[in-house]
Length: 488
Image 1 (cartoon, rainbow, N blue to C red):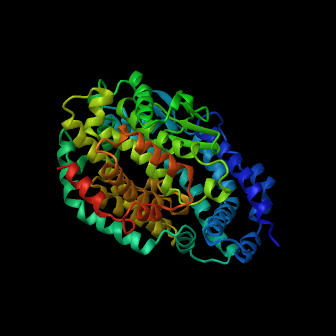
Image 2 (cartoon, rainbow, N blue to C red):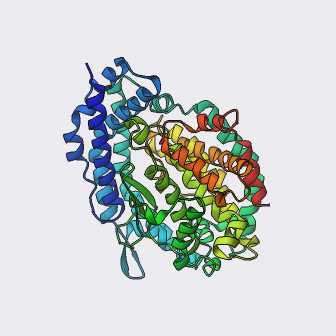
Image 3 (cartoon, helix red, strand yellow):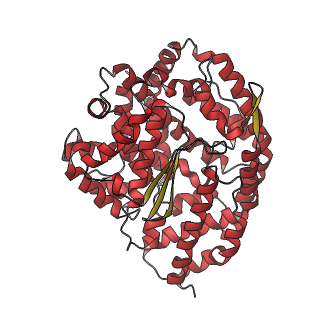
């Protein structure tokens, strides 16, 4: 019989070790992602019969479901670990020749966002995609292994498994994603056409890297002074009565490193005592957005009640933490916040571009939600690459190429959790405005409210939190209406 107390003790130790391994690799401190020793040390957590034993165990339904998700996810990851390690090593070793120099593959997205010449951007992007294509055979093998390993869990459908274990309510969520894409299409396409025109490009000639350049917003670098970035965050948190300077459990790594992940992330090495924010500097507004997003997630981890049970500290609905990241990042699109904390006067042009960035990212997330369901139900890789091009070109308005069709996706239908976070964050922000003030970020009572939520970790999924705030559940309308209005 499974001893749940021992299982949870070892599972928490495993989560800490896994997070540390990912942190070292993502921060560019280690060129390899060493998973084999870790899974070997904790093999009993993910043995073939662990999932079945947990199914039979007597436990409360919610934490039991969280634990089942942990075991299933770990079981599949364990079977695919050799390919995961190989991909990590290949990405760390890969280079792209640019300006007669070998540039680390992982640094190319930062170069693309900072390259002002469209022809050079497209040339660099083509080289980066060519490097990505060399990874695809390993991605394909990993994908096959994930699907084949389902049999060991007694399951045959990857999508249905995660829908059940993560309570994604996928049928309704997929319909919401389709509706969101349909309702916002006109406003988005008009904005794409107009904003690409401001940098001298027609939609027919544009690529995703051109949108990356737009979102870099170099014309506003004076307003987003790197020296003011940290003070702006600290002052915002102090107004909420959260003193970042006294939080010894949160540390920031913004040092540039060749192998550092271009995507910022938050690594909880020990909840709530050791939470790392990792940023790869890109410049200007992008660095502000990355810092505020990851600070929102870090505050969530660092304020968790240390007596909370393991499933609620480490597992559960990851949409919750993502929503706090979006909540703090969205401050950069609040006119009053910009004026108070950055002395940013007359930000109308910036606000429209920022709204377009949010709309683009939400549409990209909705598109990934549609695509990932097809991806994890098929092994015809040529057709999947075609579908990637079709879906992303159709819904994002610029031509996509097939090379990133596997690199784009994440395990466990992560896009579904992200889309739920997008929906809930808007509802949460509207609630804070209604209950505390339009400038809720200046209200100590709002800070107390958020800290009370953070203490609960991920005990309550976002649909439950929405009902706690007086909504009937997740409601797409606030997100849709806000993003449409922002780009008009």
